[in-house]
Image (cartoon, rainbow, N blue to C red; front, top):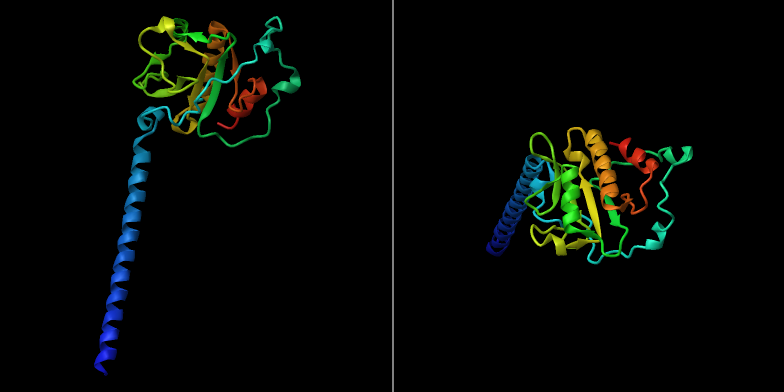
Length: 220
């Protein structure tokens, strides 16, 4: 065989071997990364183990304007008609169920009032500086953050702190009994709405109705 042709064949063979080694190394690293992510998902079963901040919560940069004329209707109690309590078509379970409690007053909820109300419903101040519902094993069932950035509550000077609204959030997929936690979730928000004088908005930022509650509960 001609020496020049033999040299070309050797070079081409070497390139093929090198490309094969690079491809194998890439696929092996990709598989290792996927295995690592799977291990992480298995380790972290509750939101407080995989959230170091409130970045995954839908928190506003600025408070939403509230139409307080909406609440000037002699504080009528909502009484749903029969059609209102008929649940909507079954929908997929949201990864995070978020409700909001909006203050009816311009100044918002005061820090001291918030702490007192959270104590009444048994919420605890957590390491992320938000309030949490803890189960018997001290794992978080759901959390409560301030509606505006950074979403946290102070641990001092509460008399000068005001919050225009609260964000409640739970992760159904991380819970053993999502329906039971959801029932507690709804009851807690409704009690706080009474204590703090606020209006509840659902995960679509619409006024919460019995139909919306049933629709979410049936998909858990």
